Amino acid sequence: MLRIYGTNPIKAALEAKTLIKVLVSLDYKNKGLIESIKKKNIPVEVTSKQKLDSLVKENHQGIIAYQKDIYTVGLDEIISISMKKPNPIIVMLDELSDPHNLGAILRSADAFDCAGIVYKKKGSVSLNDTVAKVSTGAINFVKCAEVTNLSSTIKKLKEKGFWVVGLDGDSDLTLKDAPKNVPLCLVVGSEGFGISRLVKSNCDLIAKIPMFGRVNCLNASVATSIALFALKTQ
Image 1 (cartoon, rainbow, N blue to C red):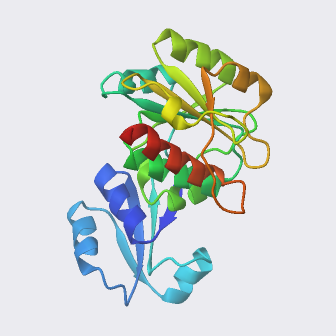
Image 2: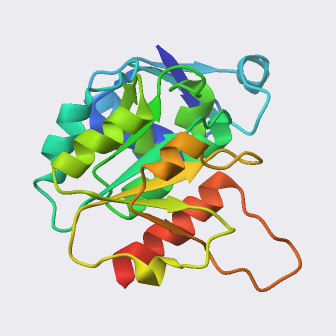
């Protein structure tokens, strides 16, 4: 089971029909949400704020829940999902290790209606409680695939008609140079290391996000969000 907390993640889990049990404080104010949960015959336990604090150190907003585990899917399922979307985008993560980044990327992937997220099984963060919380419920709706090798995955996506765009601040090109009206795979590297050499060599285009201030880098989730907005709206 995944443990989630806060109103929005629990609302999303209720919508996705993955809620198992809810713990709520005596003074929790969103009575409408509690009634909706009870109508689905999901157990609700009223307890003290002290008990909730002992379970979660962060701001739980007076409500904690347990939901079904979220499982990864196969690459073929994400490709199948993409075929049902106009100009689909798949996000590929190269050795991302921070669960907060993955959670935030899930939010952006949901906001921009991505077909799914792909990352390497070894050396990458996986779906866990922190990812679920940070995603504010997007973990329920965005499919993730763990693959053995990113380069072979890129090859398969290219065979399916995807154009692969990698993010790298040293490039002379920008996302405006990406082709329009084609399926895209956006490759994002880890903070501090970027995209690995082999994965980069398999991309069709390497593009940068122009920076105008003194800081010359963005974390992976912010870069992903900016890139998805640019690709979706150009």
